[in-house]
Each structure stands twice: as C-alpha cells, then as structure tokens.
Image 1 (cartoon, rainbow, N blue to C red):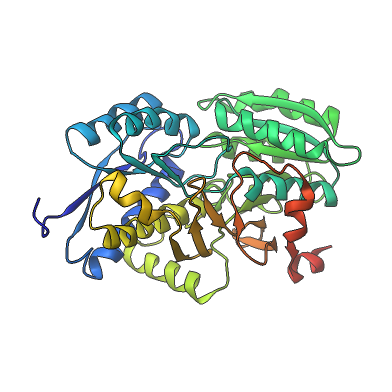
Image 2 (image 1 turned 30 degrees about the vertical axis):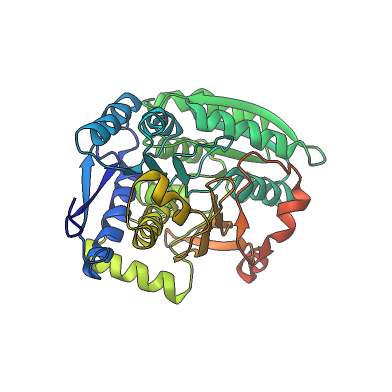
Length: 389
C-alpha cells in the first residue's frame, strides 16, 4: 500500500431500526470527526475514508457486516455499535481476525477484549453516582424498567445492588419491555408503579420505546418533582424526539451534555452545527463517537499503521481534549477516564448540570470497588442544584 493511499475505516451505525435515531447521531459524530481530520490535511496527508454500512439495529446484521468490512473491504479498524447485543455480535469477528473495534456507548461493564476500545461510560462513571444522587434526594426505593436485552438486565442488577447500600433501600419492581413494543405495554407497568409508589424510577429503555415510557408516565399523572425518572441513556436526542413537556424535570447521568459551558464544547458544537445543521442533537453517544475517531487518528500518526499490534500501544495511555474534558484511554482495561455528571431536563430541552466530578474518573468496568465512598464523594454539587431545592 502506498503511503499516499487513503486510510479506510469501517463504520457501523444504524439508520433504520429501533435504535436508529440515537445511532444516527453517533454516525454524525463519527463523520464530523473524519471531516475535521481531513480538512486539517488528513493523517500525514492521507485521507481518512469511512466504509459505511447500515446494520438496521440488528445484531446478526452487525456481525455479518463487520465480517464484510474485514474480509471484503480489508479494514483494520471499525467504529460502531450502540446496544450491547450488537457489540457482543461484533466481538468474535474482531477477535478472530485481530481487528480493532472502537465502541462509543456507555454500557453495563464486566467485559474486556484486547480488540475493543470502550470509550463510553462504565457503571462506576454513571450508575454509582446516579444511585447515590437519587437515593439521597428522593429516597432509595427504586422501580426498575428497561428494554429486553443484556444492557438493561445488567444495569438494573447493578442499580439494585447500589440502592441496597442505602438505609431503606429496596427494589420495589422490575419490568422489561421488548424493543419493538407498543404503547399498550406500558399501561400495566404504570398501574404497578402507582400501587408500589417508588421514590424514583430507573429507566434503561432505549430506542423508540423511550418516548413511550415518558408518555405513559405523564398520562398516569406522575410528578417528576416527587417521583422522577432517572436514566443512563435518555439524552438530548431522546428529549428532542419526545418533546420538552414529557422530558422536563427528569434526570440523566452522563459524561457529556450539550450544555457544558466551556470554550472547547461551545466551539465544537458550533462547528458541528455549521457543517451538519440542526437535525442531530449532540449528546453523550455523539461525543464519544466523535472523540474516539480523533484518538485513533492521533495514534495512527505516531504508529504509522492501523494494524492491531502496531496501533494498539499508541492508543493505550493516549489523551485527548474532548468536549467533556481531557479524556485518557486506560492501558490496563481499554476503557477511558471520563467526567461523570448528573443532569436534569430543563424548560429549553437541554440538561441543567446539577452535579459533576471536579476531575476525571477512571473506568472500573468490573466494579472492583463496590462502595459509594469511592465515587460519590467526588461528586460536586453545582449552584443550580442548590438553588432548585
């Protein structure tokens, strides 16, 4: 291969299917980063070229298309996956062929592969802090509701463990809904919630059913000031889809919110709007999809190759000034040092950041330390949170 040839990378995010809306933002974040890199002269003058396929939110399609990228398109690096079921479908492909997958979604943890870089949040960077924040302010009786696949099951188990550390902590209910469920699936769940009166609802709903949950909650007459929904995956894009009326007052734990008031984030969002318009709402999955491409590009510049064994040592330990803050890829577990935050949807459809860690928090995907004392003490409450009490 000539040193002037384009550098091909695989891209697997869904434009169709149950999680297409959020995955379209991840695709936009990926293409935005590629555009920035190419506009700045590429990688040592070589253009970065995405080879894109639409897996349509289907794990089997993700596996098949990952295989196609590796065998037919000869790519060494893939950016992709939102649901854990799709990541686990791609995992054996990249391991078999010794390729590298950059996965940008926060997830349930308890995984390591020498062929994956995990750039989304791990449980200690979201679930632990959210459990502490919500149980301290509303109470520790939680109702768990999620989509019917691995991420919600595991995340709900972790949340249940955390609330049981609190006095009076209890899991009062746990329900799962199919990814292609109808509105009527939420009616008996709302009746059960009304009967059990939890202190807060923990949602791990993804895709199109997210709006259905918040609609059913509003139709049931529940009040977010008394019994809010707290989520790991309700972002600005889902808020845009469901509308402010349904979303306002509810909480999300994330490492990035569009409302982060720093020059780096403001400039990044402004440039994205200029290049891509206003259809996509920047969110935590968009941001990690964006910064991971830059991590790859910076590592390639040093390595001179995207072959796994040559490239990987230049990725591990690498830092990058992402919109959320200066992240670092951790050498010992392939996850990242990120900046956990708690946000509440405001009347403008954005997140008011109520609490955040003063510095980065290293991912602990296996929850080696399973205590609030290790993480919650790092959570700094902002003035906006104090004023809202």
